[in-house]
Image 1 (cartoon, each protein chain N blue to C red):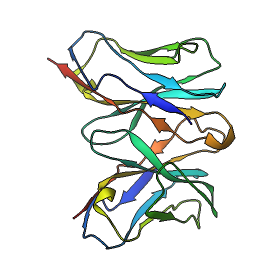
Image 2 (image 1 turned 45 degrees about the vertical axis):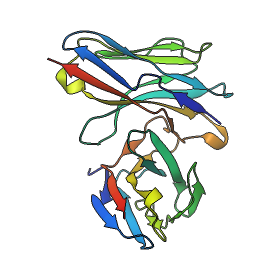
Image 3 (image 1 turned 90 degrees about the horizontal axis):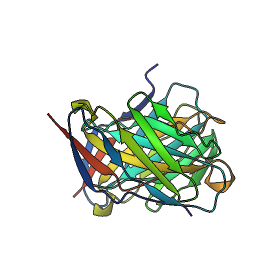
Image 4 (image 1 turned 30 degrees about the horizontal axis):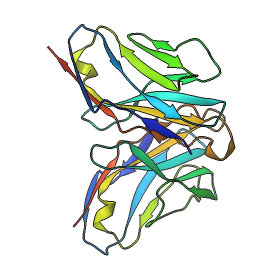
Length: 113
Length: 117
């Protein structure tokens, strides 16, 4: 199993541009999550999904959108990028009913200039 | 809402010695899970140890153990026989076991641990 994969690894955006961060898991996990980690800080939940077609906001959802059309994929969309969105983004997944362990992807480092 | 506080921004320890990282949390939930995650320079988040709140026995994983004090809302991590590979940022995290916060992790600010040879 590849686990949780994220693309791209790095990206530089200009203010106002848009992009999609991709996340795929091959463990047949129902739950998926997007976190952001600002420099020197802990992770904060952006959005999460408990299954295909079901998404909900986390602690810091403003400026982002998600969709969950399949069990495997959970893309994160940034519209009108702002410098405040400069961060490292982590995708994670877990089995429903075994929420006590989340498996994380390697992260995407995003810089908005 | 839950909060997780790690009051030690940085810690250092000599190889083979023991170090304890502190974590306190605040919640109104009665049943929940607590975790310690390790983030080495590679940025990968690695689960070190977890504790279920309804279990009184402290969790242990090889050289890693916790001191869980539910009444005090304290959850410290003890690393014994420290190794150079333990150098990393360590995060304490919390999730409720039910309700609207089910499955959502709340992280502390992290503690940078450096193990010196």
